[in-house]
Image 1 (cartoon, one colour):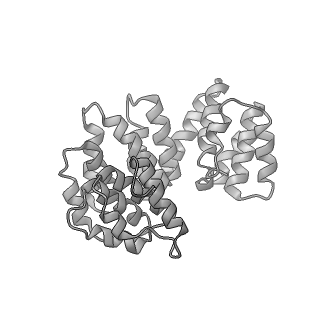
Image 2: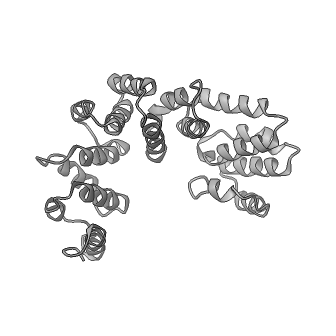
Length: 274
C-alpha cells in the first residue's frame, strides 16, 4: 500500500507500517521521498496527531531544503502549540504569501509567539474585502481552539463583536474567544443571554454555545442558566456547571440532558466539552 495505489492508499500504507514498526514512528526518509506536497502535508499532520512523528522529528523536517511553505506552516502549528518553535523569521516570510489562508495562519502563530506583526496582519484580515476572508477567519478560529492558542483570544473577540458579522461566524468567534479565555467575550455572551430573556430558543442556543467550551469557563457563568425556568436551559446550565467544576455528578447531569432528545445536542456535547 505504501508504494502503490492512489494518495489515500499510499498514506494509509505508510501510517500502517509506522504503527507496526518497533519504533512506532514514520521514517523521515519515507517523508522525504514524497513529491506530492498536499499528500506530504496530510501525512505529516496525521502522523503528528497519532503520535507517529515526534516533535524532535518535526523540528528536523523544518530544516529540510525545498520543503513547501504549506507543509512548514503545518509543522510550525504543532510546534508552536507545544512551545517547541523558535523561528519567527520563517513565519514572517510566510506573511508575504499571496495565499490569504497561509498569511492568516502565519499571523495566528506569530500572535501566539507574541510577535506584533501577527496582530497587525490579523487586523488587516478583519478589514479585508477579499471574498474568502470569512472562510479563512473561520478556519483560523477552529485552529486556535484546537491548539489552545490563548493569545488569539482578543482577535477572536474582535471578530465576535464586529458590526455586521455573519451570525454563523459570530457564534464561532464567540465560542473561540471564550475558549481562549477572553473575559470581554464572556461578558458579551452574558449580555446576549440577558437580552434574549423572552426568546428561550435563542437562549438555548447560547447555553449550548457555552456548554461546548465549558471546561475553559468559570462555573459561575452557568449558575443563572441552572436556575432558569425553562427545563432544557436549566439542564444545560447544570451540566455546564458540572463540567466546569469537574463534579462527580457530571455524567448524571449529562445523561439527564441527553434524555431530553433535543435535536442539536449531539452537535454540542463532545468529548472535549465533557
